[in-house]
Image (cartoon, rainbow over all chains, first blue to last red; front, top):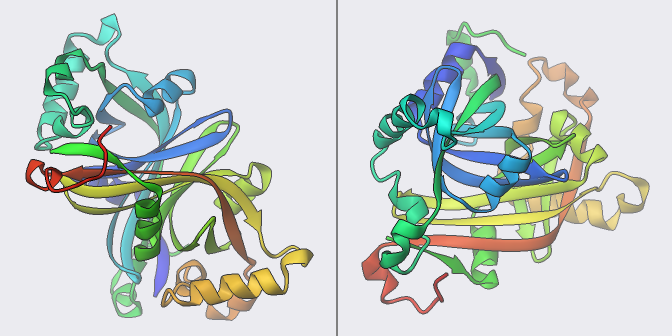
Length: 160
Length: 160
């Protein structure tokens, strides 16, 4: 088995294929990481959430990191790491075009809206839950692929 | 579907069952999250790694967060979040008992040692790669479970 770096376009392809990743934020240098459902497009990532710990932290420190992967087994996996900046789309200037775009992108993930809202036990409270759409503006993206030796000889991707 | 908090013993059970998680560290409030293979035991988590970005960051800021999950589908998953402190086991006082214990724990994950070492293309360099065993001393642990309504009625775990 060998682990090699993958080019940017392969990172993008993974982010298009998968819709669940792990989002890390940080406050006072304490990191916090949670699973999220996302929708990727070049240069940014869209996420929908209820207002909880991660949103409160990202409002104070917009530096974030998102990791996504496809894991076959311990010798066959692909992992991408994105760093970026949190941008909340519910402030007035994003109400129209950007917010509608985020909604459309995320609507492609079936049931994306059920996960954050499911945290209330009382359905009558759903309308009063504060939710946000946010965007991560990507500043860097890198990826690694683990492969068996047999596959490796057939690949042209440069090694580390 | 509903999402509920799970008790500490269910968090522990998940961490015993799974061996891959996502570890987040932070430097200058920039979070960084990577997949890791780990071995859990009460109060701490053992990890083996080559010395790269995450180790350099955790040496400067030992606050970490680890997330692990079992995802069946969007309405059936379990996720645990651990916060803790990084402790490197290669400093002299840990050379004997603790380090040997970490080795034994991690040896139970087959091939745990291949993943970090696979990042060199030249096998002759393996012996010169700097590696570390480290431990995360757990300070807090919490977990959430998503379940279908039908399952929910059969559960006794308290909702949020």
